[in-house]
Image (cartoon, rainbow, N blue to C red; front, side):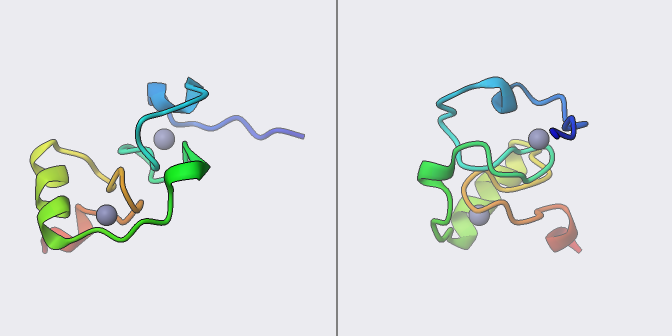
Length: 66
Ligand SMILES: [Zn+2]
Ligand SMILES: [Zn+2]
């Protein structure tokens, strides 16, 4: 039983995504490289790319802006 992911991000369709987490929904897209710790600098760069979630650790970035 596979629940379709509502996220349209193309990284979900890739077998070997270059990022660990989807920038739109934060779900893991590449298990092999997920779980790394990010610095605040990494997250600042992700925010500049207008990502809702960090592609490195999956943390929600927009909420942290407040
Ligand atoms: Zn997604
Ligand atoms: Zn991160």
